[in-house]
Length: 97
Image 1 (tube, rainbow, N blue to C red):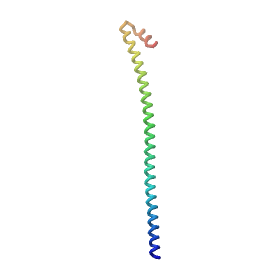
Image 2: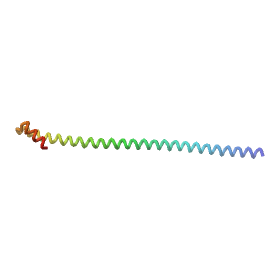
Image 3: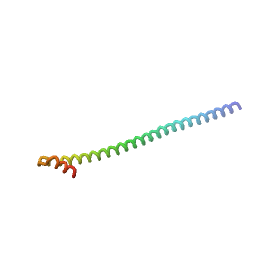
Image 4: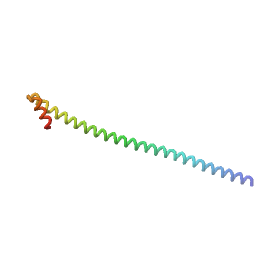
């Protein structure tokens, strides 16, 4: 009888130990899942930030193109100075374009 109780106690202890190991494994898996979730959340924030930066760059490039076109229009007037235009005529030309 004592041997039976001892075996049952060992089996019970083995079962409890197995349950504890399973709980620890599940806790470790949960921790890894949380780390992965945080990683994806950070990645999402980074992607949004990158998208916003790209939008700003696109706006900046568009503004630079507009300024470039304005400068080309101004440079188009410069040869007319050599053709004898005075300042008043030059201002009229630049205001009509």
